[in-house]
Length: 231
Image 1: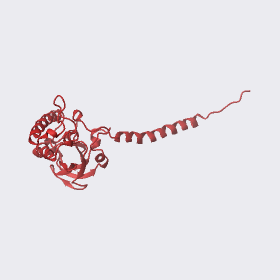
Image 2 (image 1 turned 135 degrees about the vertical axis):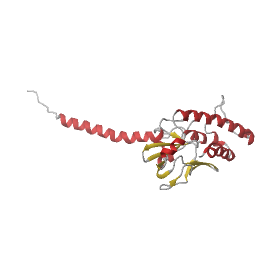
Image 3 (image 1 turned 180 degrees about the horizontal axis):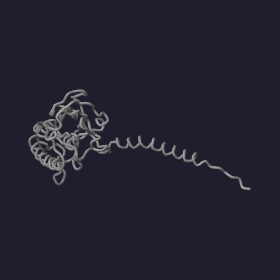
Image 4 (image 1 turned 90 degrees about the horizontal axis):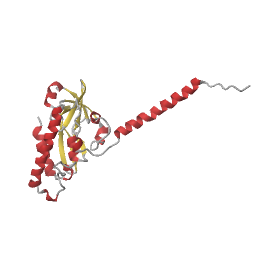
């Protein structure tokens, strides 16, 4: 008589469940790591303007996460112009903010740009992870790269001062055209013959154009594209 082998199917399923659970325990941290991996530097050809995000003319953005939480960041256009920079905080957690307050400073050597808050409120949290990756893209969703979490105090009024949807696309196109004019003027004003080419063939602005330019031109940019439009 042939021998009979008994297999406990419940024990087998238990092993399968353990394998599946182990896979997810390993996969989830790995997936989160991949999201945080730095990609290439920002590019002017790939400026992101997602729906639901409000943009300020000083090149910051605000996203209403919940009724009492607005996330604030710096837009791709500015990141694509500056190239690698360090970000120095002017405001700290717990500080009160007014729209237009000096929030942080982007620096590259002796060159710098002041960044202003697009909303009024209380600074609740600083996203230190996003600060480390500021100059490069990550695989995170746009709003996951927020820099500051603000508890707003005049959101319903101040959001009307910001740019949303299709208007943001029109605004960025206007900014790019205006920047060409400013760079052409600066090329003559500051005698940039010895500087790298500012425009690609076809007249497109080269990525990270401010990176190699003088502090005078950074000041010009601050004046024309940030200070002049600050409410």
